[in-house]
Length: 486
Ligand SMILES: Nc1ncnc2c1ncn2[C@@H]1O[C@H](COP(=O)(O)OP(=O)(O)OP(=O)(O)O)[C@@H](O)[C@H]1O
Ligand SMILES: [Mg+2]
Image 1: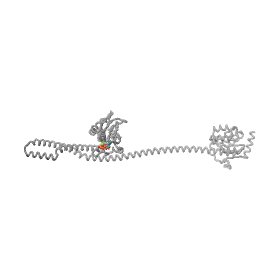
Image 2 (image 1 turned 90 degrees about the horizontal axis):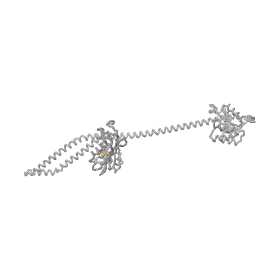
Image 3 (image 1 turned 90 degrees about the vertical axis):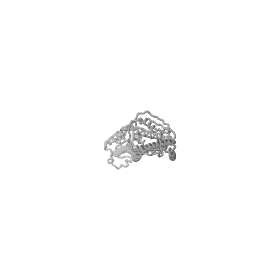
Image 4 (image 1 turned 60 degrees about the vertical axis):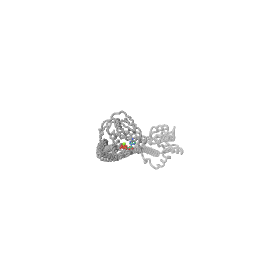
């Protein structure tokens, strides 16, 4: 019965066919052999054929196998579902009327799962509603039994081509996504590189600016140094004979004073003489001495010579600073405890400090370091003198020696007038001073800065206007004058 029914249907297949899809409409006049064969030839394409009629199943199977397709068959919806889950198909040809699950439900299930294999539905009892439903669900084609062999092959070929194209499209899209991702990664890497390079360039620019500033500064310092050396030399020579002449004048003056004192002692004894001529001469001499204010002159002479001596000493000090500034490389290295050098500096400056400030010593016991002891003493002298000059009436000065981060440090703090914020960056500049002409040349700190640098150390200042200032000198404990020659 089954077989007769099948054969009968096959007989009719040549007579009529019914197809609804646009694929069918557009390709009606074409021979299936002329259709594009995207990837078909490379490997045999696999089809799933579902029909509950074994005769038809076998007939279509053979037809399609002859055409080079690999065909897997199923006679009900459930088996078909299992096969779809475990295999890769390029096209599904399903009868609509199936036991268990019909072709439309199978199609709906596939679409629900996002499986996009083209499904060709075949029906023995065509009706418009089922056709519309099939197309709505995205059936690739809808054929009525009996199906014309050629038509079936043409539709299957197209569906397989569609699958190949679809898969190719998906492959290309995946490839595109991959390229896009790689491109984005490249872009990201490029942007990162640009960012790093920009940062490097900015850093180099910053370093270049700093180097330029240093260069300008060192050129300025060099010309100031040359100028200072010239001035020091010019003043030094006349100062040498001014100093020695002054010493001579002091001796002459003291000789003259003792001689005159002797003369007037003799005059006192001659006053007892009754000779009128001698009395007249004594009176004349005493009158002239009074007119001249001789006794005041003699005592003032001493004071003037002393003051001049102080002035000369100050000039000699300035010349020494200028020389040190111009040629900072002339000193003897040795070993010293920083506390001892601070003590020496205190002794040298005691006259300036004693009336102005209470001195508080806070020394940590530290081992001696290699250094230029005389130069470091000069630094502490300069800072101590500044501290005492900054105290207007009465204040305090702390002298500290301690260790910090492998450095030996000397800190000198005062309760003086402090340094205004806008002046802080200038105080180490040569010739910067806020003091009167004969009180400061503005060399003390710049010379000190140079000496500390020579020791590979650092000098820092903290100050609040009106409250005082703290100068800290940091010296590397492992400094070696021999490995850092002058
Ligand atoms: N302890 C301090 N308190 C307040 N101001 C200070 C202190 N130390 C330095 N200064 C300021 O820094 C300036 C520069 O000091 P620096 O020792 O170089 O020169 P100076 O004292 O003016 O002159 P010089 O030391 O050559 O006699 C001072 O004129 C002063 O304005
Ligand atoms: Mg000073």
